[in-house]
Amino acid sequence: MFFVECNIAFCGYSNFYFIEIGCLNLIEFKSVSKVYEDTHTKALSDLNIRIEDGEFVFVVGASGAGKSTFLKLMMREEVPTSGSVNINGYNLNGLKKRDIPYFRRTLGIVFQDFRLIPSMNVYDNIAYAMRVIGSREVEIRKRVPYLLGLVGLNSKARSFPNQLSGGEQQRVALARALANNASMIIADEPTGNIDPRMSYDIVNLLNHINSDGTTVIMVTHDYHLVKTFNHRVITIKNGKVASDYPDASHIDVEPYRFDTPEDEVGTYYSDDTTVDFDYLMKTYGVETIESDNPFVDIPTEPKNYPLTSDSYSVFGEEGSE
Image (cartoon, rainbow, N blue to C red; front, side, top):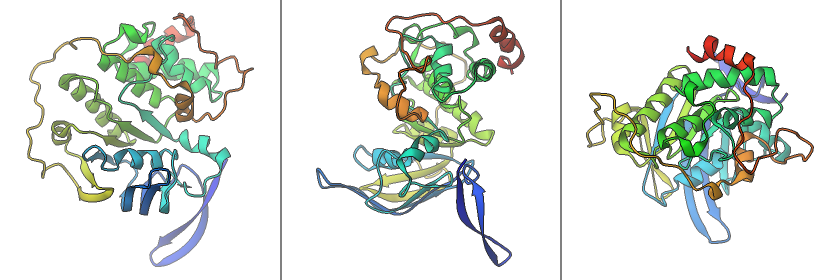
């Protein structure tokens, strides 16, 4: 267990406390600049952003504005050239390498291209995120069906990624991001590969998750979605915060309006060969894979792992909530 020293002020009195990491579920960038030395590119310049626990924030901006670097700093893939980054009680500047996986386990990452493991069914794609960090099977058998119910995919537990539509695959990815009770969801263009109706459904699901207290940071180019859900909007331009509005009232586009439910049209899924397994493991909070761990072997061909009778009983109890 890790602790962090914090200065907390009450009614004019200030004292130092040691509190368990994870209690400070906020994001704070202080005067952050980032220069990539190999290309001498200045990606961020004097960036100051504070996001409180439980917020839903859209991050927008043109390609090359600095959004990707912002996310890389949040996930501790990069460190700032100057300034400081604090997330969930962790000071990312001085974070030791051995502590990086524990920090990443406080985050749930959702990608534009889904990054599901093609040889695993839906149930095991979600369960795998728990297995690689050593969760007990009894916990997995309770948690995974509950998450499938949350994202409306109970009936797809045995399906494989290439049997799902784009919206369904992204819902699996979202359930996977929630598998380890992340306090924060980082969604990197999660609707980039799906159509407007499916996009609306995905963000509506994120909105529902946020209403239960989970912080959501979503990078997007879809201003119609931003207008529709009307949360805080941070615009990054040329590596700086160009604007920071509490809602989307300043955006001059029409919100999406869907009067009647529609079936998803078409199937969208990424090429199996594009899954970067090592990177995926890092987002799970696993830096190295031990060869003797029975849960990290990836089958080369699709395989249906058995769902026990206990799993089916849990579907009825928690999955329908």
